[in-house]
Length: 68
Image 1: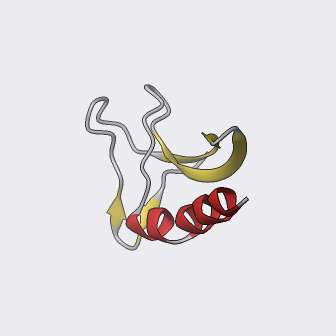
Image 2: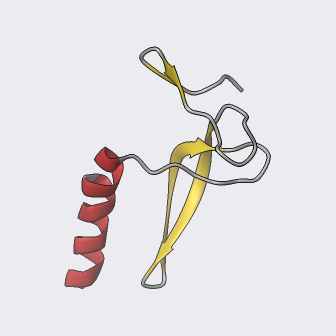
């Protein structure tokens, strides 16, 4: 698996000091599960949620589930 790069930047885990990699991650909200590829530390499993993802797709899914 390759290192995650955004432009010239490589995202590094603050705790482990290793590059993050894209990994399929399962999120649970209100009893529903959704999977999405997100930057994740291969050692400790910490994930990075970008502002775009949080305010975009995740907010849309949250709104759809709350409207049910």
